[in-house]
Amino acid sequence: MSLDQITTALSKYMLQGWVLTDQECTNGCGVPLVRKKDFSKTVCVRCSDPNDESAPAESEKVGTAPGPDPPAEQALDVSPTPTAETAQPSEADRLLRRREQSERTVKAISQRMLEGYALLNDSCPNPDCYASPLVRKRDGPRECVTCNSKVMTEEEFAEYSCTRPTRFQEIPADTNPKVMEVDANAVPVTSTLATVDRAASPVRKHETSKTDPEPSKKEAKRLKQKAKETSKKEVKQSKKETKRLKKQAKEAARTEAKACATPSATGGPSSRPVGSLLSATLTSTERGIEILRQKLDQLHAQLAAIDEPCEICDVADASAQCSQALRKLLKVHGELQYLGAH
Image 1 (cartoon, rainbow, N blue to C red):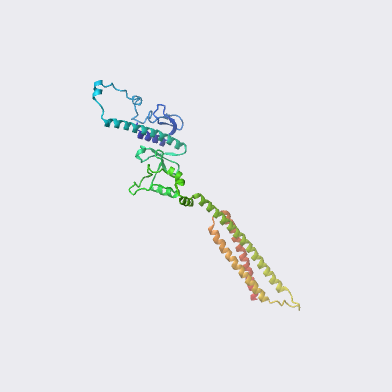
Image 2 (cartoon, rainbow, N blue to C red):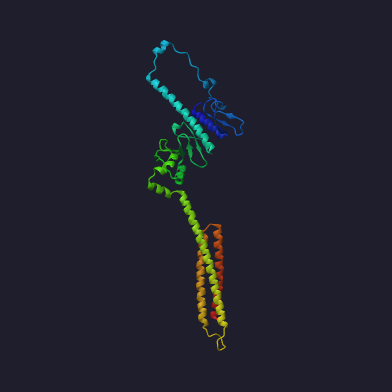
């Protein structure tokens, strides 16, 4: 069974709900075992896969028995060409490297799955990975554990590059639009993220610190706290101003009533000019009404801009008190106008 068939079989078992264990096959084939969730059955996809028709026979697992040695004369007469001698070790080395890579890939996939990664039904498009299956953690990008590269679509690439700025290799225009892959010969994304601070110049570090999400979050939190404190301060000031204006209007009305009721020294009504007093009181009341209306407009604008429930309650309470004071001042203003007319 080839490496591609082993990888495909492991992927099918994982998609069917089997669990990939960290134990290797006892026959020495180097393939991790898969088991059912209820521990009722454990299978090696290379040695004991019931769905595999191309599983090697026992003689193939042990190895083909060597044939009889050729005669001595024939061995002396026949000599392999240099091309065959150089090609045979190269093929053997390639198979050995592929087997070692397969073992490393299986162990890396097992480790990633223990860390919470999910095994996907997609394989790495890099031909040097020999169809290594991709893994992904939650909503993150798809990763190849063999070449440590990330495989993503155009939408995933745009979203990932916006949320996490990284120096990706520029992708040529003739790249397949369906699948984009970071070049295996380029610096992997994981190593780039680890070495970007060391390789960057002081200016680059300064630019990176500007786009760092942590300071922006702290700055937003600080501005929000400052706005909240300013809102509370304005609410308190509006309450104090409302109380002061109400008190001023009451004192003006009380003074007007005393001035009208106090007799003069000759026994008649007060000689104090009532018209000037009414005019001053009306002017003060109108000024208070204008101030209250301005405060009420400010509170309404502030109420439309905030979204915190506590702040909304405070501003709404202050707005209600300001409206009540405005109604009282309007009532006093109307009474004063009536007194001035009669």
